[in-house]
Length: 415
Image 1 (cartoon, one colour):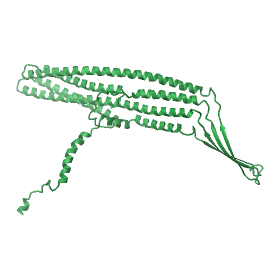
Image 2: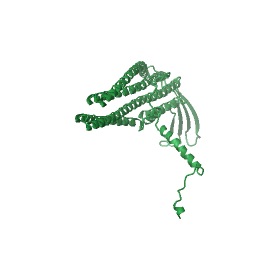
Image 3: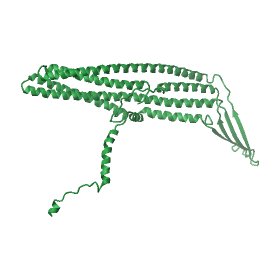
Image 4: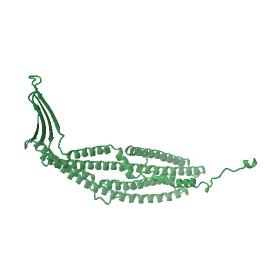
């Protein structure tokens, strides 16, 4: 019994259960990596925004519509064929057995050049749907960039507010210790506590702004986590056409195709008819069957499509004018974005230099205050200036990164 009472619990042996240990080691190596991989990248967030956006659903509907128009333009007939049935008899008057039955199939035919013009128009509509989807995606990318950098700015303000509160609390503790030792007056302790309360209130406001920015981001993307990295480098390969220019070019092509289709449709479509007839004069006579072929050719009229041609020509002129206007606006927007980037780089350098100078001055005055050579009020003024300089430096750095993203947006580059 004593041997049983002092028996040690069974130990896990590496030799007895190697698969279990290997599994534990693999899990220990994988879990940290999986946590690092959990944050989506900027491209994945944009895809999530596109899937949730109404513009993405409308783009898919427009693509389906363009595909249907393309299939209709490639068909053998411009319109659906029709069938006509008819029967005549003397059943209600003479009753001698006269009867005549007719069956006719009508097939609309393309006018010369009309089918090619319809195919061109369908291709223009398909290109326009793709260009519209690209423009909608770029607009969503711009909105996503704005909300992400809003989140980054509010997060930075919250972090600096936390640092300011921490230093304010440390200063209050130091002042309280020196006040208890008789080195400082009671009024200076109250001033330090007031500074702590002010820092605590500033932190609460910063947290509120950060939560509001995150909520706006969550509403757009449906995600509660920011991308692990969304700082962008300036795109150097911009050989592709800007989506707005693509949309303008597709609008011009579609208007030109519509004008050509109206010119080719100066008359109604001709119609080929194939008819079968069965008739008899009386009950005693046999049925007579006959086959009939017919072709209906409408005559052309110069005034038939004059209004439609004029409307299509006006639409073409408007599309070309809008294309020139969009090109000029994009060039102006890109120049403005480049100027903003240059200014952001200059401001960021100045803000960083000012922050270093104020931090150095604060360090010197903190030592002077510790030695009793500086008043608390002067130290607090310098500390506020340092906090403001740090905030300005952080804002300038974020503004520089946002200016890079804005330049990419102006050039039509997606994240």
